[in-house]
Length: 320
Image (cartoon, rainbow, N blue to C red; front, side):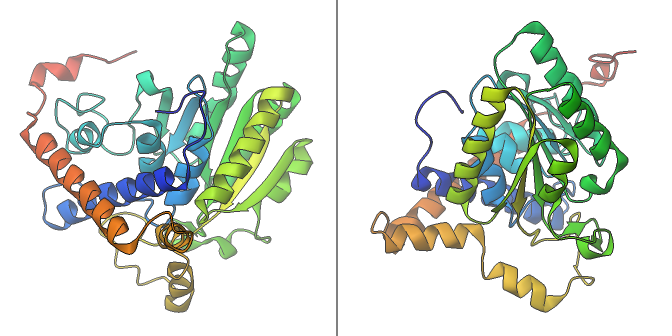
């Protein structure tokens, strides 16, 4: 779990990315076998989520979207409880009531996971306003995609945050795809961060497949938000290497484009850099990956052993 201590180094970040990848591939395999409901994965985007969350403090709050695995796991969520939630089991974080697209973990400061495109943007300003009015420490990190950046709520949220000077770190994970539509069909320019100036706020774009670069950029952006109490728009430029929702044959994806991005897979990049620097051997990297996958196998067994909620649970945790 993040805290106010030295940042995780690249080896720790590499392990976190392996965990995110193994978690989502567990869901993909389970979905193909008919054992786990389908979901929206963030495969290929691990560096973006892990890098940003690693730069946050324990008191910071998170609002995220339907590709939330990296944010939740990097924040310290237990993969067994996450899988139990996805599978609708009682021992999930929300008692099996949220599925994969609405998980919140209050104890970790994850306020919301929204499947509504841009839904988190509509609430981030309110959460940040509350933080400011109550004098609470911590900033608000709001994760969204390039699709949400094409919604009207993007303008409304950033405009209000700028006018009211709210401590929001807006993180656009520009993964090039908006469901089944390529970003180029809805945006004239490549980078969402260019819009920051229109709201009188700072913005930056970082290589979203380089976990160290993301961590550095997120740390700098977060510190600017803390110091000035003003919002910042950080864009992590990355790629969604699997389909919109499992299962998805990706027949609509340009094969050459996908191949070019796969050649820059964030986990492969980190692994290669660790080996070349002498911090990790190929054998040690393989062993680490096996340990992570064994951990996920145990997490899946935990989720499968968890019972379904009792029917009476339908009437609890419901608010008018």
